[in-house]
Amino acid sequence: MSSHHDHDNWLIEELKKSMITFDENTTSLLEGQKRSFELCCTLLREDDDLSRGGKSRRSIRQRARKFLKDIYQSIGPEVFLLCTLGPSITRLGENALRIRLSTIQTWWCTALKPQGLTTVATELCQAKTISSLVQSKDHDTNGLSGRRPSEYSALPVTKRNLETESDRETRNVQGHKRKKVLTISPTDSNLPTVHEQPVLENASLQGIVEVFDTYMCNAIRRVNVDGESKAAITMIFPGWGGPVDCLMSLDVCQWGIAQLSMTLFNVKVEWTECVLHVILENGMTLTTETSEITLKGVEDKVINKVFGSGIYHAIAECAVRRREIAEGRNVTECVSMTLTQNGAIINLSLGLERGLRIQNKLYT
Image (tube, rainbow, N blue to C red; front, side, top):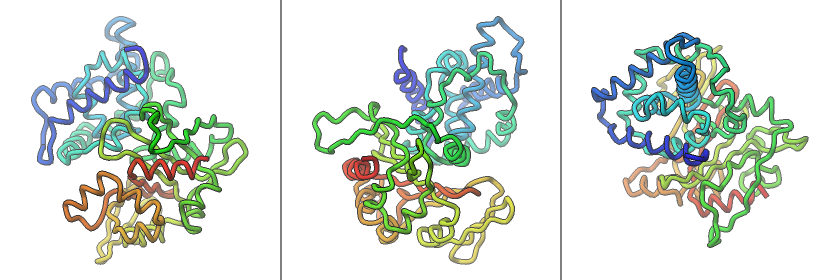
């Protein structure tokens, strides 16, 4: 393997192989999987000096351990579990520095996730206190300190990295190297492969008014890029033949959460110190002490009202929405909103053709 692209694809294929062993009703691992998972748990518990074995072996195990920690903290328990079941610790350690977490995250955002995987991953990670194990510090020597900052900064904002990425963007975007933007026609026969398409970040203020109404334009967080004010919008065009061709993320200001939560999902949200309360239409209240929670399920007419006809038609074009309609579902999971103490991230799954049109408006 000679490039980041090769190493990314290698890991994604390994994760896919592990994922097909799960379905909606899976409740436990296979015997061989249990052994692999235990080996990785042992790796996480090893002392920082990893004193056993020679220098080369210690280096590989340190890199594998740091990579597993990064996966758990940045993407979540499901992908962490898949990483422990597929490739060996040695292969993970050998390839860790060449694998881009942003690419793995993008694949995961569009993958079809069996409920059994989520159930098993959550239960195992809680039973083995993985969240505590990944907090322990690693030496930088031979770890992932060689990973370039850009390989983290392109992570799409999702459940495990919302607050960290949002805060980092606010603090460090001054002087950030802006990515090259492609202006692409959907009918262009020379349209580049998805792997060549960049993650597009920070839309122009002139562009957002062509897509969203005044309220949404104001609700999207502003960031400073090279002294110029931009809108915190990210667009990604995944390239693994999954059901989502285009993923858009909107970083929403804290003041906009209450109205958007009520309008989109008909729920009321309140923070009491560090506890989030989600009050449902029937009066039931959900509470969580975790830093974030994701809401899903929006009606078509509400999408049109909040995001405008352009986004509405782009979502209708998405394969996921077409499948939902065929199944008779009146609400769509193509719109989700993840709440944090600092604001919220709204994720929109769009079709390719209309997604490209929207991209051309936002990033020209």
